[in-house]
Length: 249
Ligand code: NAP
Image 1 (cartoon, rainbow, N blue to C red):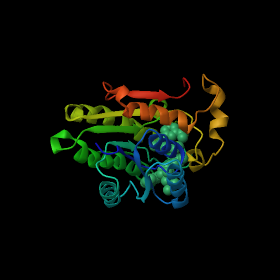
Image 2: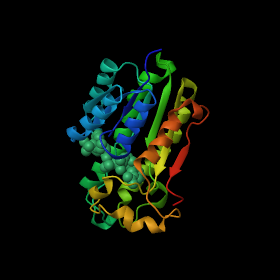
Image 3: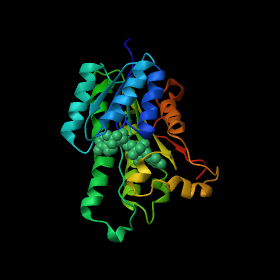
């Protein structure tokens, strides 16, 4: 059997970058997808290669179906049959109450986070399902504790998108369970990454960390370990399930 192949959407920074690096250390050939930060994606790829691993960086916006199709085709051609997808790319917008949100903003968040994840999973299932001649595989979706907490006053649109990810994880897991594909999700809590700056508050984790039972924010690596466990054979009977990585929040 050839080398296992993993695609990490949004693998250039944050949780995705940590996952790409851990996957490479576990022996996967890695596709690091990014949308605009080519330098960050190249840095992840170069780091993996410097440790003897195999990786490629592929640009593509998960909010665009044509980009997703191109992304998966590139993985087929350059790395071989896909064994794992981490649906990690996700966006949020500036902290705001719902009463001040525009339809354009809401649609942008839902398109990238929900439609993007669904379409990436579609492409993965087309390739991995034993029903389609594939060899099976694993999908891990990035939900969020926001799916349970709701994001009031900050981003209920983002929280709603993550609630959709939870439902989609359960449904797709059942749909493809007999076809060799396991579908699970992680729900990170307050993790130190750039995403909080996208919301307009780079220091958000430090502001809120005292309310976390463990009294600290988490690291991208701590989330990556849960993702890679769900994809591993150690999780062979787990599908449609969730791991909260939130320090008890
Ligand atoms: P981040 O630091 O903001 O990094 C986002 C990554 O996604 C970057 O690699 C970025 O690429 C890529 N990306 C953004 N929009 C994209 C698009 N339309 N198409 C393709 N790639 C795109 O994010 P993060 O904090 O690591 O979050 C990763 C996932 O975890 C997200 O789904 C997020 O909702 C979830 N999560 C995070 C936290 C947290 O506290 N950090 C908590 C709960 C859930 P570029 O480098 O090219 O911009």
